[in-house]
Image (cartoon, rainbow, N blue to C red; front, side, top):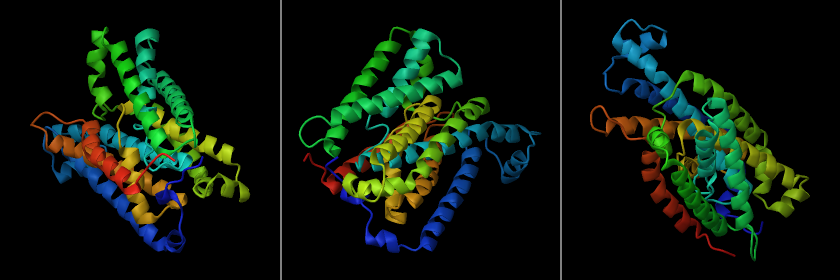
Length: 348
């Protein structure tokens, strides 16, 4: 790869950044998640009190309010898992491609997973949560390989601009194919309208229990490759000179990112921009060392999706809600434009 985004390179300032400062930011992030989780189970059609929340967390469902809180808990847990997975996937993709605008949505990975789920459901009757998750991961992997291959064609190999263009074109084509599969099937179209937007409103503990192990595996793979991602940021030649197996590190890291994006898309739909926005914000706080960047991205991603879910319920008319996929798109689209202008991405 011949193009390296300056923002992704580790600098001396990152090496001197105190571990205490990073630890404080991590603790702050965890505290924010706790507060947002309480808000998440509090907001809904039925108002609840603090006593109801404490009783519900203690396992009591004696009142209607407590039962409502217990019913909201899977939604809160899913927002945490999906937000963390998408942010972690985006950070890993940016490290693997050395592309500051890499993201499961922008690179077409999320739509690849979506198309695989829709095809499995429409033509093969794949209704089980495990099957949908499996085909989503396969679809995400195929889309990732395709986009990277197209982006590497031509003079100069892979560049951020070529990857972004290839991803945008692939994502648009996959979205058209999804519509083509769903339009003749009114029953599927109705059932998947909200899923295509991306949301966590239909969370159920059994589906979460099936998806959580895959998310955990993807996260562990990414965390295990954190040191290798730091080497990749220096360039392939420098990384190889330091003893890093560049191909293996890139392949394993990409595998972790694809598993996270595919599993998250299967259970919550294609939620965009989380993997783009969060890693950039986290680099400003904890630097470019992936040993810190990855866990903090996961925490911040969970917080963002929780906040988007709560906001979607607060600003919507009574009894309705705005899906988190819409909220993250409203936040992420301007941020994407700002990143492109700031990094001055251009084809080499």
